[in-house]
Image 1 (cartoon, rainbow, N blue to C red):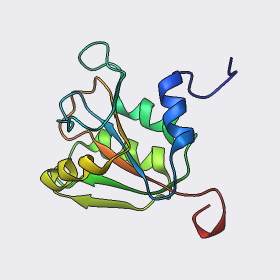
Image 2 (cartoon, rainbow, N blue to C red; image 1 turned 30 degrees about the horizontal axis):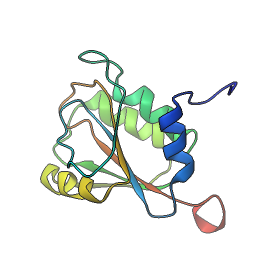
Image 3 (cartoon, rainbow, N blue to C red; image 1 turned 180 degrees about the horizontal axis):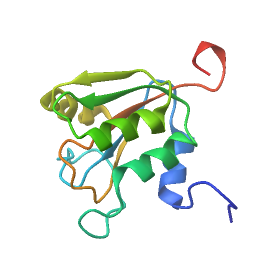
Length: 133
């Protein structure tokens, strides 16, 4: 058994299997997920778990080259929390429609119970060496 970090077996398996440039989506409860994209559903009730603690835990275990969020996301707590979780990771803003379209190419979606509008973040995997590390 692990002593720290993420304990959810499916989530750990996903993170260690990611390759450079592959994406995962950390999503709110309402993001539509294409049928072919695997989903790790963490939500147990409305609002739980929140997106930011999940994002922070994932960011602690994954080399992230860049991230993408919806330009419609305006919640100050969400935006500052994403910045804090991702630290110096470049964040691109696209329309919510473009973000939903990009989900079709994701390795998986990690669905939270968050009910904050547009609380979705696409994480682009990096590598632990070279300029991206």
